[in-house]
Image: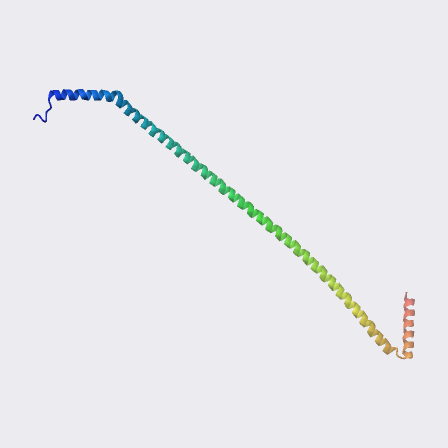
Length: 168
């Protein structure tokens, strides 16, 4: 059983070495380990704080981006509305101009037609007058072919002239 139970001397030296190692660790080892643990804890705490701040900034950036997107959508809608209004105004102006041009062309065409009509009427009258003179000339030549008929016509015309003078 001597293997299981140690001697008093062994226990003494083991206790003495343990105390010396404990003192050395207490004096120089533990402070370094504790300092390293505290530094690591501080680093982790600082990283967590920075991560939290980054999350807050990210949330703020998301809100700002949504705000900017909404503003951009509103601006786009406004620009589209203005473009539609401008397009409608341009179309209306073009339609008005086309109507005015059409009315002007119609008026010019009517004036041209009227002038052509007057020219045609004038031409027809001239032709009718010329035909009438030619017909009258032919009739008078036939009627006044002999001198007796000429004298009857002269007498009749003189009677008509004298009777019209008396009425006045």
